[in-house]
Length: 391
Image (cartoon, rainbow, N blue to C red; front, side):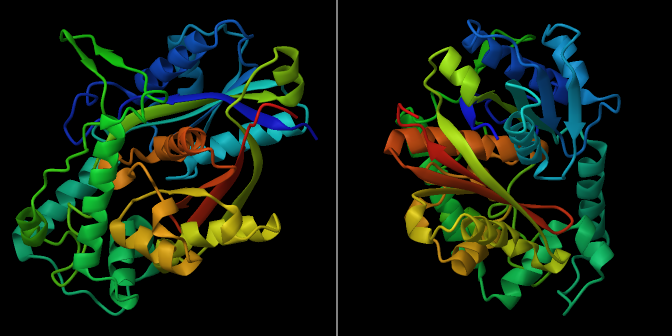
C-alpha cells in the first residue's frame, strides 16, 4: 500500500444564483480548473487518470472525458464521471486515493463540478416550489413525510429535523451571519489566495476573482423577514440555506514514490475515509456520523483533530452536526462555509477539502477532517495529515 499525497489543490470562484458563471457549462468549468492546476505543476508528468464528480451532469457522455479534451489533455488519458449526489467529488477524491494506494497509478487528477443555475432538475424544483407557494401557500409541517418525498427534498428533511432537535430560526440565522462574516474576513486577509484560480470572462473585459455569494451586509431585518422555504411554520429561509451556485475544484494526487522522485513538498497526506448511510429523515446529522465513524476506526478522539470542514447545506444541518459530534465551534469552517461561499453540489466535496488543506497550512494544524452529507441519506468524511517536510 502506497502513501498518497495531495500535491496541489485549487478551485474556481463560486458563482451565485444568476451570477457570472451561469453561461459556463460544467464541462467548461471543470476543464478550466484542470488546465489551471496542470499549469501550476507543469514541470511534473501529466496525470495517468482523471476522476470527476458531478451531481446532476448535463453532459451525459462522460463529462470527465469531455473536460480532458477541452483542457487539451492527451487522448490516451482515461477519465470517469462519478455521481454520489452532493458527495460526488469527495467520492472522486477517495477513488483516486484508493487507486494510487493499490499501485494502479502514481499520479491522478480528481475534481468536481456543478452548474446549478443551468440544471433543469434544480430549476424545475424551484419553479414548482414557487408555483405551489403562489397557488395555495406553504403547508403546515407534518409529523412525518414518506421517504420518497424526503429523498427528493433534503430541505424538507432538515426543516423537520430542526423542529425535532429544537434548533430555532434565531440560532440558524446567527450561524449564517457568522459564516458570511468569516468568509468576508478570510477574503480580506488573503486566506483564499492560494486556492483560487481566476476566470477571465470571455464576453466581457473583466475577471471573476471572488466568491459571489459572500455578503456580510445582509441586515438583521432581512433575516427576520425572510419567508420560510418549505413549510408555513418552518425555520429554513433563503438566508440560512445555501444558494443555487456554480463552480469547479480539482486536486493533483501523487504516490509517495512520485513525491520522493521529484523531491516535492506536498500539502498533506490522505490518511483514511469513511462512508455511512442513513435514513433520509436523519440526513442533518449524516456528516457527524461519517466523522465519528472515521475517528473511531482510526483510533482518534476529537482532541486529535484541529480543524473540520463540514458542508453547510443548511445552517440547521451544521448546528445538528456540531451538537452530535461535540465539535468546538471555533474549529469548524474557520473561513466560512457553503452558506456564504456557495454549495455547487458536485464541486463541494473537493471545494471543502481544498479550503481545509490551505487552512491547515495557515494554522499549522496536524490533522483535519472534511465531512459532508449527501442526498439520499449518506455521509462521507476524509482525514488529512499536514505534510511537515519529511517522511
